[in-house]
Image 1 (cartoon, helix red, strand yellow):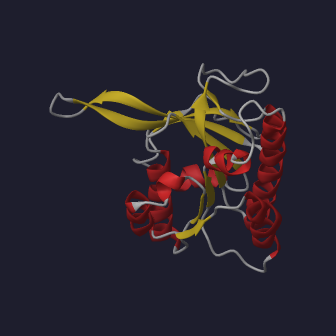
Image 2 (spheres, helix red, strand yellow; image 1 turned 180 degrees about the vertical axis):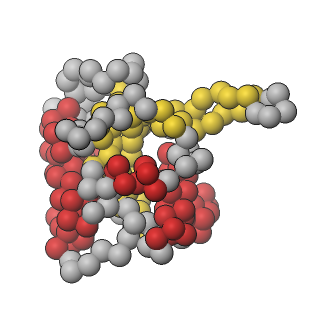
Image 3 (cartoon, one colour; image 1 turned 90 degrees about the vertical axis):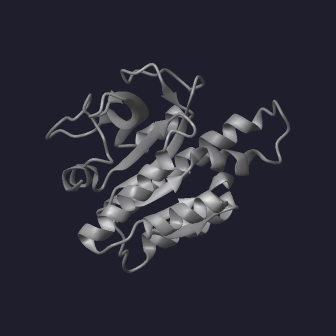
Length: 222
């Protein structure tokens, strides 16, 4: 865990994977473990409506994180994220925004199906979002996670070594330092049965000092 977080400090991390594969739980787990190790809770920004439920209440209790529930993209981008960057201290172990898909629903709720403004709005929103997350990560020396669903649709070419790709704008990747593919992998347990295990695969890691691209590991075991 400590080794992972050290490598991700000051970096904006795009974490993507299939819906209902445990991305939100994994971030909640990291928040809980880091609180135990550092005394600092996680700072989780929730936009998905499925987190405004009993399941979200359970995650909040489990993670012991500071939770901010957002229903306005304008408030998040123009006020909340700049406020976090400008404040005098940030006593948290990580910041995570869950998720880009939830933000998409908020941004496009008033757009008609097929509206030409839709992609433009999403591209602009993703660029502003990753800009602030990058500044927050670097100023406060923490990892900044942006969670997204995987999708067959990606704006631009995808060259990062896995066929799965995030529902994300290529233009916003310029502010992303690390891309991690979150997946479920079938593994044999000790008694011969098979179970799903959460695995992270690093598909992009920007650093001149080292590379961890291609690395696969279980974040729940670190």
